[in-house]
Image (cartoon, rainbow, N blue to C red; front, side, top):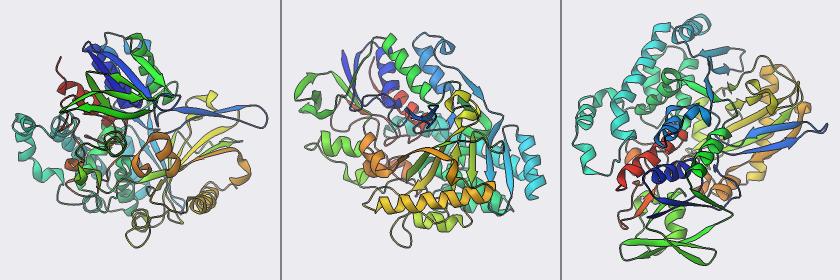
Length: 494
């Protein structure tokens, strides 16, 4: 049996591995000349010849067991391919008024930090993390491990447990509302509101159920791959190749060929290649619009509002900052105003003049990612998805706002320290990854029914067509993309 995967993103590679283990002969078709999609890498050369390495996209690694599972599934030792370490610090937080807070992996240490710096009772933090763990425990097997589009999912023991615990899941309130009830200090509310951005949502709209997200980071842990985030991609590609999977790069799929209720193959470079099964890791909107234009279009899902996107500055910085670590957040002074602008609540969607800045520096843990005495700065701003904004103007303004904010908080003029630069914006995200409107996480999760507004991992029209990746169930981000591949493979007959 022959299977084709459209797209060598992380979900596509994971799908290929799972199908190969089932006995399929697998070919992966990727339009770019590299694997990983957003989870890729590139380098800058400094004026003095030194080299900065950057992970292009995702920068936080959680739930490493989902990567390890793929090696074990294939009968391999994960450590022979991929190594990582658990972080002692989850993130360092900075505010314009000089407040600084370190989120420690050790819950009690984090609680003491919160109490000492913000005056917030540490027990409030511990209660919040316990509540996050409960939400995860109740929902994981139901929402994350199974298809929501199969009747059997809603009839089992896991479903019954979900029904019984529905009041505890926060379905009918917002993340911000729940966090304001939990915490006294607005800075701690802001800190936990930011987890809505992990799937491109607005904490003032998204349901409090998404307070499940901190569980992944604090209770399971935040990790760092020893060779950088791209080693998730490279190690899985190596495993896939060892399993005999064929990768075809610069191979753009033009169409999914169908006959009746079955997919028959792919059209690639005007050549039709027959396959018994097809899995699309391409954004579901573009899968239907571009590859299946004559199929029944699931308009209700395809037209759902999209998640936010991102604006990324990659800077080579010619000095070191000991007050910074791997993950750093510089918060805006008016978080709600920032999200109102981001999602166009009071006008066209755009960036705030006072954006929250995420700053990732992998050279803190992998020194050869920057020349000695230098740092590789990955700066991410939450940005609206691409609806035709004047991005050149937005980018120029945002760059100045970032420099101003970082210079103020760090007490150093950042501008002259930038010796290399490249930029990724919603337009280039859209063109490089075929993400509809450059959205990072597919559909938005800004309503309580969002989980049901993602496309199934299978086709309702074609019996041998499947879908994986961040635009379908269960959602975006590395862990959920890997889970989408797991759900898909369990739907495929052995």
